Image 1 (cartoon, rainbow, N blue to C red):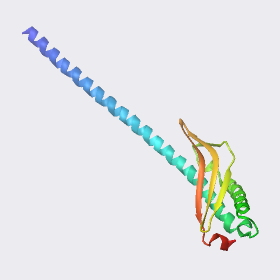
Image 2: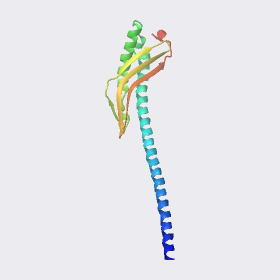
Image 3: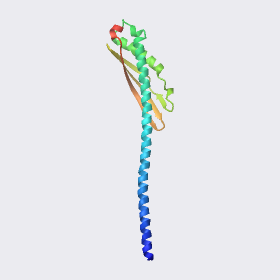
Image 4: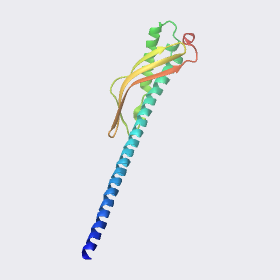
Length: 164
């Protein structure tokens, strides 16, 4: 009878150990999923912030492009060749965009410009595009990203050669 009690205790103890191991494995998987989900949310949040920086630069370029076409003396110049006109617009857009681009509004991000803004403008009858390059490095904690190419297209209210 004494041996029977020992066997019962060992069986119960074995069942408890098996249940503890299964519970530990399940808990470890849940913890790993939770950490993975948290990392995914952090990465997604960081990507949203990078997208906001991209949008800020694009908005500055678009405003500068429209300002160059509609509000600057260059936009009304009639004596320039098309190539020279686009060069003048690009120089104006570059200056105005540089004035507008300000990264201090992005708190918690470290943003560095490692190359100057370069702009090319393509002027057509119903639209104009500004293609820009500028290397921007963005970091937050261990996350990092870089942006270097920007492009905006502005629809023109008046056909290009009529406006000039």
